[in-house]
Length: 453
Image 1 (spheres, rainbow, N blue to C red):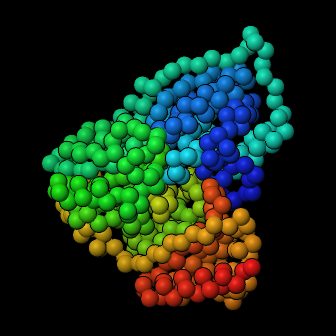
Image 2 (cartoon, one colour; image 1 turned 180 degrees about the vertical axis):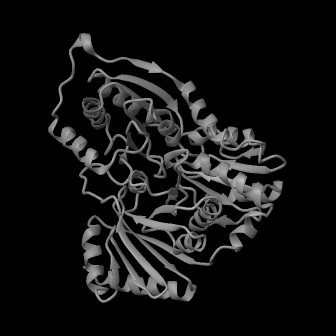
Image 3 (cartoon, helix red, strand yellow; image 1 turned 30 degrees about the vertical axis):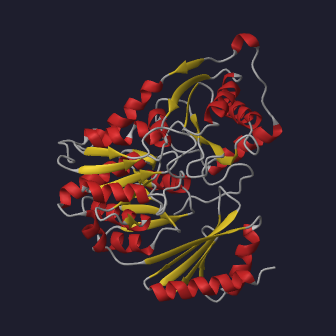
């Protein structure tokens, strides 16, 4: 059972994004706000990350919403999962101004439903139709909506995480937090401190130019974080992307923990305490499935994107299935007992709990997991679907999974080729139990793609 992926014209995998002032203009954001306000009447919560264009765009968003007689509650700068937590079962909808992991010149809009999840494809397509058709009219002067400033609502999110980890599991544990100058500067150090940790922070001052590193937490970008982990004797380092819905880790030896290994470790911990279904996209490493099935749990695959994971989780629960965990192999993990969205702050807290429970260092826990090799690549192209169709013909004799792009199964390995939902690129992921096999497959797929003229 899978939530199906539908073709959208403006919104991608996680909202609409573009270079601020060029692709993503105030006029467009105002129109998105008005279209949203015409669909979701009532109280709408909004927020933004630290990007320099955020203030300009959030004002345009609020103007559009108020032109439809909405009451706008501005939660200020905060992580995307914090806004989603605030909205859940309390507001009539919401919108976040963020471009997540994209470079500083980008910005975007994520639409959030009253249940705290990102808007699904069917409703997004209806929203797009209103945007393109301008099928809404501003209210008269005496019916215009109003605005309320409520930056204090972020406290609900921090408390919502910390109360799930009583008895200060981080006591006597040093942790390095790298919010990357994003909104997690306001949340993750406080969450970890509340769990009893001694917290050292790097890139902890909010700055939309991201002077310390880019919003995408990469191996190279986290070198300073890794150096602080080893020099301070910290148990681990945790870093976030631009809106803190993801978290990645550095172990106590200063080594970057590959995101699928992180997913597998947390999945193993959860599967040992409860049994049920783990939901994840087809892009997630096979080591996660191995760990889940070894713990007598099952796995369900979806298209790539947290929207599809979250909505599949909810659909399975509605059918009486015990869904216990979900997420993507990029550090974006979903805890259904907390909320149905990727949550980097919750993941940071979960890692503290896992280390406290196991009594083992992070590097040792990672070494216990099934070894897999994952190679990632991306190719800039304006026509990703044409490339995917070409690849399908070259591998027509293999087992193909077309849940999202094309996933080619070959013995104990697979290759996934899919068009990005946020950038004009095709992403290629190779997963194998052998480094030599992975390199051979990478060479093979690149040779095929080079023939495309």
